Length: 112
Length: 119
Image 1 (tube, rainbow over the protein chains, first blue to last red):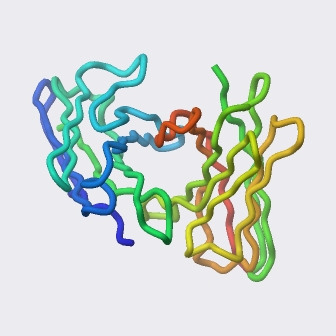
Image 2: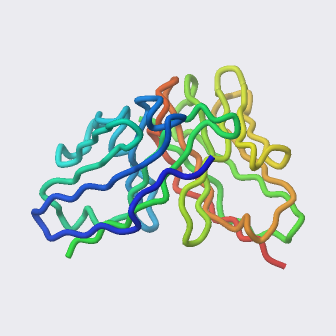
Image 3: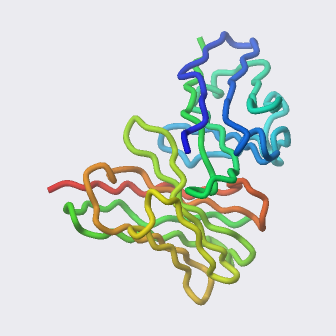
């Protein structure tokens, strides 16, 4: 089971929109609507930003949105803000016999 | 809302075992699954295994099968992860993460525990 594929880095200016892709397979992203996204700031606990492909937990800004088509999910951050600069990881439940959840390779978001 | 509080940093020799604990800050985490995820320096997140807090059922990633054991105490306030046969590649930040019910996502996270394997 390989990690889900994400771009290593994405950047944008304040106020712009960026999209991070997350490509898996028919055993994970394509098979289930259990794709979630996590924000990691150095020294802080990871934070759930999106669950079940497109749902936001209470307290997460509506500038964050998720989508999925076939084996690829995506996270869009609209109206980019300096505090959005962080690492982002997607995750999916998987039917693999070797593990239950697979994470993406991670994307560093830089606010220019 | 429950918060997850992890035990402190550990330094271990190769071949040793390490146990990391994860405690519910308020009450218990009955009804949760507690997962363990690690991040090696400069690497991504890696799912290791999980425990159903209610019935103690576990599932592990094949990569760690035979080396990792996840348990919970009978008061259901603490979950622990033990990793044996440590090698330098096990040097990482280890997180516990809480799944509420069977929601297939990690809603709560501990602050992370740094485990360093070095002779």
